[in-house]
Image 1: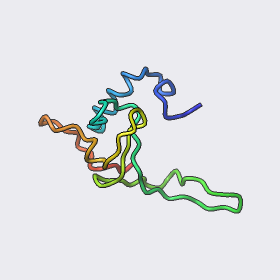
Image 2 (image 1 turned 135 degrees about the vertical axis):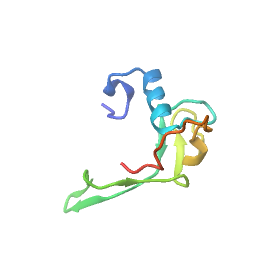
Image 3 (image 1 turned 90 degrees about the vertical axis):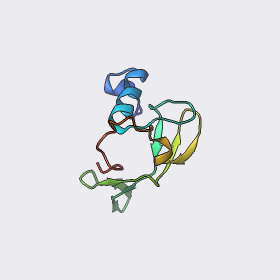
Length: 98
C-alpha cells in the first residue's frame, strides 16, 4: 500500500488536499489538485552492501527552484510554480526542510 495516499492518513482526497494547501501553500496551477504533488529533494541515504536506504534522521531539503510535478495532470515546473499566490496569510515555512 502506498504510504503517501490520503487513506493512509485517515483522510479522503479532499481533506488531504486541504491539508497540503494549508500546510504548504501549494497546489497544481493547472488542475488545482494538491494531493498528488511531487517535489525533487536532496536527501541523505545510507549505503550498505545490498543497496541503500533513506537516513530517517537527516534533513530533506528543497526550495523554490526544485523541480516539481503533478501526478494528477502531469504539469511540471518548479516548486515556486505550485505555490498558491499569497492572500496575506502565507505559511511561515520556507521551502521544505523536514
